[in-house]
Length: 183
Image (cartoon, rainbow, N blue to C red; front, side, top):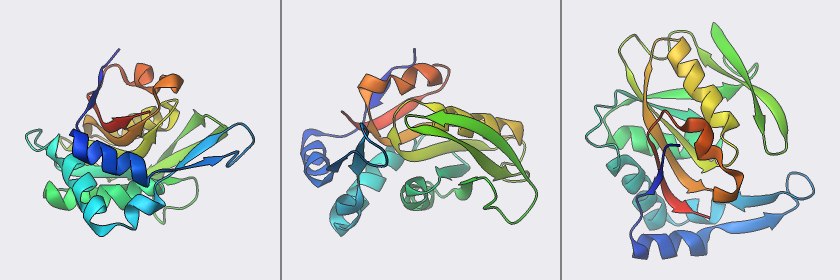
């Protein structure tokens, strides 16, 4: 299994923990949703979080950063700018306007399908995949498979939060996985 490494120092870790709001029974009964909107509303913390997510991959020759719909978009865009990389949106089925490929996936509370444009990751591109939460790993694995299907190499994953109890990292054992905090 790929180890999930934490990239946050104690001060940043404390600030992140204080800013994440737990929402019980959302989007369905029994699920505890980790709401990052308070973190996003704090300009300094938002900047520090995306700086830390990018810093873990500063020497990885990343050419593109892929953000997974939808909170992954919010984090991936500033990470891409810091890494001087292009941005790839990974969207839910039917949301992309041009020729795309799709991959079904399972998540903690259901199933869905992700898609990416067929030309999103040019041959030889090194893609960092960014999302807010690593839970069961289904979304992340489907995203990696899509990037590889369109010609990219997955340089790794950068997550804000890893939910250790759901063991999502086990599904990503062949990739580098970095996270800021583990819950």
